[in-house]
Image (tube, rainbow, N blue to C red; front, side, top):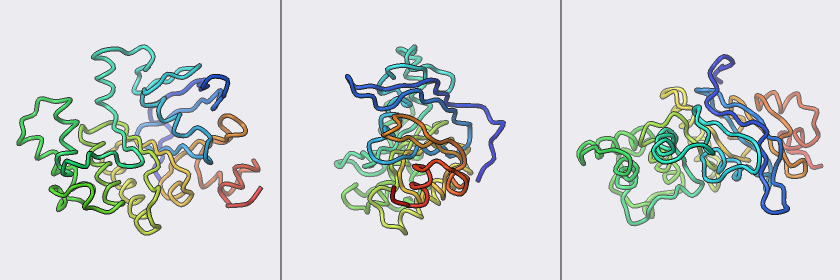
Amino acid sequence: MVETPNAEAVITAEGVAMRFGARTIFKNVSFEVRRGEVFVILGGSGCGKSTLLKLLIGLMPPSRGEIRVLEGDWAKLEGEARRGLLRRIGVMWQSGALLGSLTLAENIKLPIEAHTKLPEAARALVASAKLGLVGLGDAAERLPAEISGGMLKRAGIARAMALDPEILFLDEPSAGLDPITSAGLDALILSLARETGTTFVVVTHELQSILAIGDRCIMLDKDAQGMIAEGDPKRLRDESEHPTVRAFFRREAM
């Protein structure tokens, strides 16, 4: 586990609330993500994890509150300033979101083509390097349908890292994977975080992954409509007296 108590905050959420019509998803959510850590957003189904992720990457504005990412406020950014911030983050969606008609290398080159003026030879080198980084150096010319679910997740991470982002957001990276493949992906995430210095924000409800990779976490709860815990996930498991937190980390029925 990395110690980052004095590291700068690269994400700050203050008093964030999200509603859809009369339905409140969460309210008064406040936290910081520090540079270089693996930060986990966890909780049961329907608690708002994926909604919070969409707010953090600027896909929608919060109903109330402020979110700053790398000192930029999504609500105030437009045009080139907004595009500039987007180039500094990467996102891997749960499905991997690769285009099925393109090879893995071609998928990874897409954001490079969209955001840089690198020539084709340079784009190919970057794609090859990113695939090598996630252990897929021999799979560059394969199509997404030709690889396993775990390889798809790794390829999705490689594409999310194509522009060397400062923050990488992962949406349910272990979902649908068997325990051995999931453990391998956890090890990859930790390795990438430590070797590249990239900040990871991981949305998941997979307990083993949370304990394996998380430096710090926040826990959202559907009934509470907001945050019910924050801190080192192992300490929350061992020391929390909140009944919902205890039930989650100790797999206890309530």
